[in-house]
Length: 152
Length: 245
Ligand SMILES: Cc1cc2nc3c(=O)[nH]c(=O)nc-3n(C[C@H](O)[C@H](O)[C@H](O)COP(=O)(O)OP(=O)(O)OC[C@H]3O[C@@H](n4cnc5c(N)ncnc54)[C@H](O)[C@@H]3O)c2cc1C
Ligand code: FES
Ligand code: FES
Image 1 (spheres, helix red, strand yellow):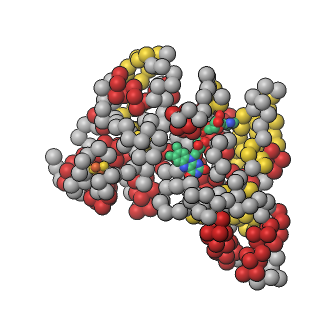
Image 2: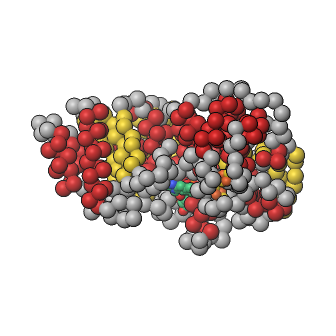
Image 3: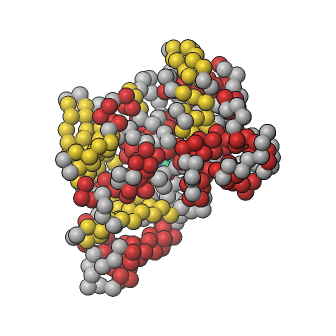
């Protein structure tokens, strides 16, 4: 089936199989490997992208469901504050979970620029970091929400 | 097969526990995406996501109970209808609808019908062949009543429940519904009668509560039946104390 994706700001007409996951189409058809396969079961969050500005696990969504929607992957972020904040706060170790966290936090900071601690916690619990860099990640989030990111 | 958030069909499909040749996506039916207050009642479309329900704040008990399911990003996809019609035993989002005697709008090959939830939900939603859940309809008087919702898990912040409890205080007493305690979600009139017996001390009511359960307490890798019972009884004491006499 043919779907239309607004992917990282560009319109694409693409042929997909009905059961194909958005995650696989992003990685295999478009070569956008920022969205990582982890559990492929909705548990780890490493495949997170945004769909119409909301974080979405691309392993829990069919490519067909994304037809006509605006999908952004980490490659499409440009120079978002959260990317610099991750560098400033040493918020990654192996880096495998990083794109998923970044997409989730980027959405959080645009949907809830004044997010309180409970909201930050609720949203961030969607992602797992096997290297357990949670405190540094939390500091990166707080620095973005407080507008304290050092310039690139 | 009906498709709503699709998260269960995708995850169980991956391990060959669900197979389908075709799906019908309910998200494209406008009635399934409705969220409106009409004639003193709140209409909630079955294809609204649990995050949309939480963020809308229109039915705080439903929003809060739904927010215990999975994690925030998954709830951006998991829907009310998908949770209630889930193959899993928990279906936590049904608890507020049971407590508020909501009606359900069901559609199928022979048209649409509206039916009180107590007549069609008995552990699972008893749909006829080809039928699907379109909406729930809740009397708005319930939306602002004092309520309580708590999910007890084994260890992690994200997990299926040891026991999830939702409760409201109405003019005629406290109503309670549970998920994870027995092998299906339920509300029990006999249990509510006992727990509202204000002549008995709270500890005595809670002590007798297990005798009014509709089925044995679940024992599994999350919790033994004995441990579940202790956790549940502590929750009952908190509810009876918080929602008061
Ligand atoms: C990471 C993760 C964590 C989870 N944690 C929890 C938890 O803590 N507690 C809990 O209760 N559940 C939990 N679940 C299960 C989840 O809530 C259910 O799987 C739910 O069914 C998913 O909703 P959905 O909208 O994606 O359903 P779908 O996958 O679209 O559908 C699920 C089932 O319901 C049927 N269906 C869907 N909508 C309707 C309708 N309107 N009418 C008739 N049939 C319908 C479908 O045909 C299918 O059989 C979790 C799931 C995931 C992926
Ligand atoms: S790969 Fe999608 S949540 Fe783990
Ligand atoms: S940095 Fe290694 S998993 Fe998070």
